Length: 300
Image (cartoon, rainbow, N blue to C red):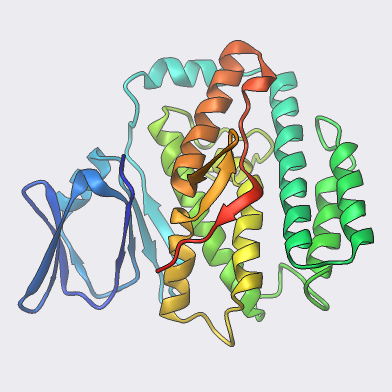
């Protein structure tokens, strides 16, 4: 299984060499076998990248993330087709019933709030706030018609930050969250395509300009892992290259799913396959979502 994440900065070129990614700077070149690579994150605006390489990265369904001048993920490359049974998988997805989608959304948001409450426990937040989160988690209806997700988010972020708003671009914590969420979102989108699903067809998210609505749904229970890392490792006054690298390497953190600790990369795959199994069997016990009962950050 692909596991390596290649972070590219301050190099001259990326090209294909036999079945490997060749990274070159001056007389130094490094070759990395394509089957080992899960993602390539390019933060260098001056690096030369061959089309031959990009085509091969797509063929191997390797996630390619390109960052802008602010070092934030700007776009990523996805293959046109990524699954041997793509047509039938898409047909099945088009037939997912609304009732089953509602049940899935209820479980996703419940797990997100449970994971947020676990972060609050880890950070020693007052018990009465955690208790409110636990109560909200128990009363979510299948469509979350009363937006308990939003109520939980206010309690959650106000437990850690003063005058906090997710819309405030001046806060370095928001920049760190956006960076971490973007990497997670692109990894989830990559796996959705690999499973033959249509990434634009969301469960709850229906943004007309969002080509990855389904990833925006599936990321929710993973978000608290990014939040927890930032709380345990505050970013300082700005996002350094070293800090961004730590956020990228959250893909190698270990998180619990199906009663086992798995890397985030593996947990994403298990979760998405379990959701496919749920829609095929109409058995909601098939749904497997990550939890923060046990976790372990990846040490660089």
